[in-house]
Amino acid sequence: MPQLKSRIQDLATFGGKPAFNTALHVGRPNVGDRHALLRRIEDLLDRKWLTNDGPLLQEFEQRIARLIDVKHCIAVCNATIGLEIVIKALGLSGEVIVPSFTFIATAHALRWHGVTPVFCDLDPNTHNIDPLRAAELLTKRTTGIIGVHVWGRPCDVDALANLARHHNVKLVFDAAHAFECSYKGRMIGGFGNAELFSFHATKFLNTFEGGAIVTNNDELAATARLMRNFGFAGLDRVTSVGTNGKMSEASAAMGLTSLESVDSFIETNRRNYQLYKQQLRRIPGISLLRYEEGEKCNYQYVVLEIDEAVAGISRDMLDEILWAENVLTRRYFYPGCHLMEPYRTEEPEARLRLPQTERLANMVICLPTGSAIGSTETTAICALIEFVIKHAEAIRKRWPIKPLFRHPWRSAPS
Ligand code: T4K
Image (cartoon, rainbow, N blue to C red; front, side, top):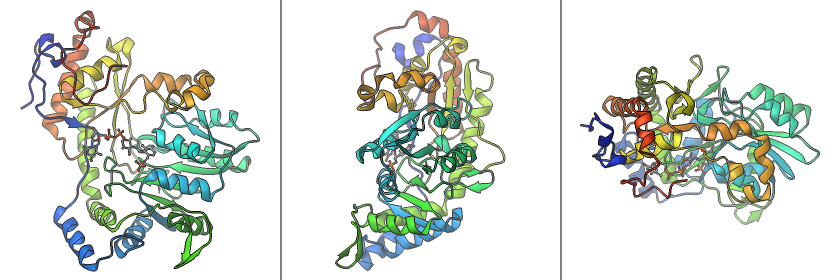
């Protein structure tokens, strides 16, 4: 049972016993029926077909395309390589507008291909790229816009599509978080020129490592397929530049097995989310990110905004305190891509146009969820947060301290 706190000295930060004996993670993998997975692995070993467009991969691609009602699914070894393939296949060059509030992969994929990511501010209501701000960033050098469906909540797809059409630039969505989510009743995956899913271990649906390019464009799909396999169009015929973006059969086996459990993954995440929602609602200064009731959603992220002026404690203090208790919250996507290298040095003045990003990146933490978490854990985490906020003033008086406890995984305080 988790350790309850009655005095602030009980907090692990101040020398008390951590609330949890073992670490609670954000991003613990969702694993489906392991017997089904092991059967598939046995089969692929018997077949001695381990990668290169094998039967499990083909089945996986077909099932995803059907599930989200999109013409083409090209499974890849991870979403970052998938994004790079799309960048190349669409011929993006010059400048591409991207949000700064995203995982660094979105920006790096562009930069890796010599394209300049132009960081755009977010809409504080959605955490997603603000189309009005994006419009201000278009120049003669702009060749595309990449929207990111952060936390699985859709971008303003219609506004971005209008903008892209009007200025004749490409539109791509980084849908790394958004598998099994919808926008205006349509599954995410079919919007823009292409969308990218991530099937990394920490994602809602995982293939150990993996991802997929999804598109309704036949030509783009054919080019991306070639590029995924070094540009091979036949046994010894290479027709374009390419890379090795292939997904292995073992990953496809995991993907197919995960797909069979998608409904139960959603149910578990939704249950955790509702528990958090009920228990956090009365705590001042803490707001839980809402998901649109009428849309499909995977509830993979439980995201809090901490308003320091009301809560009496900063996001970073709360984060530090929770880590000491073995609740390994994450400050995604702090501090924003524009404050990471090489972008920080290259364009220090980007901060000036990103006030909402900088504000939000200092307010957000993600809480543990997924199948490793149940009502005992959510209740104890919420009680901890409530305790900390209730005693914010007394805790602040003892802060800054040199914490007695520092989790071995945690780097130096920022
Ligand atoms: N676009 C966006 C918007 C993304 O969020 C991402 C990835 C990408 C593109 C690129 O997709 P991929 O190329 O990865 O397919 C994690 C993931 O590594 C990353 O995939 C993800 N976004 C990002 C949001 O989260 P880290 O640096 O936080 O990972 P890490 O290793 O600290 O793991 C997170 C937590 O999960 C830890 O508490 C430990 C736990 N964990 C992790 C792994 C790998 C497990 O319990 N088991 C595991 O096997 O980036």
